[in-house]
Image (cartoon, rainbow, N blue to C red; front, side, top):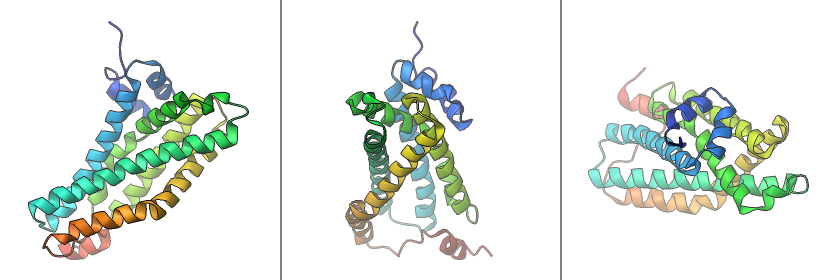
Length: 217
């Protein structure tokens, strides 16, 4: 029976965590690679939601607000993934369309989205971000880890140098951040308004404030 990317899901995850380029080769060649990448994004989103749920539990929010906050956080996480994949594809077309005609094809966009999805593997540990003191450093570490994995994946699927892959990935990330803080800001504001519409005390989400809230010195 032919092995699929789903069958090798955990092997692919471990490959990404060790920054092994072979994992990105496999997910492009094995059947159901896109599905495996989607599962990775879902796992990363669930982990982030789990960390968020810890903060919400500490704040003792009501069940409806708890659920709504998790839905909003998950939606923003998903949009972030879509924005990053799309902007990276566009950056790739601008920088390498002449040398890599393949980038102009929709299949290239799918390949980049699949690669980025698998590169989200380190974010499966996002629930650790809720830890007092260590949360912020862990968040930075996981983001850099994921970015490095994505750069390696881009090098593999596009056949470009590591430096070109880095600029393609980092520029896509920067534009994604700009979009999230411009186009995405109204969406986040609406989400924040909805979450705060329900009667409850103001949420303590900043890690330093959370430490004070818990009485950690």
